[in-house]
Length: 69
Image 1 (spheres, rainbow, N blue to C red):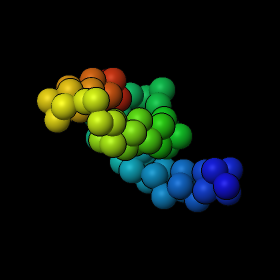
Image 2 (cartoon, rainbow, N blue to C red):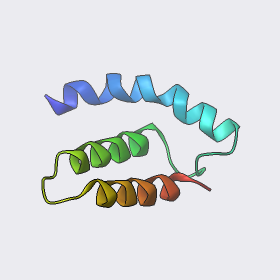
Image 3 (tube, rainbow, N blue to C red):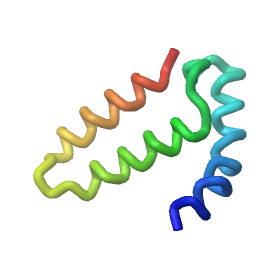
């Protein structure tokens, strides 16, 4: 099932990655697949009962900072 969704999801996110590359807000070595991995990671954090909202915010910040040049 994941394999069936991967290509369409990458096609949806690819223009976002391209725009972010063009305006310099996404590291040049990252692509749509990397953005999808970051989004899945963030989604997993939100549902983790052992994390406080502050923990989630901190981890999301770390992930987002890692995407920047």
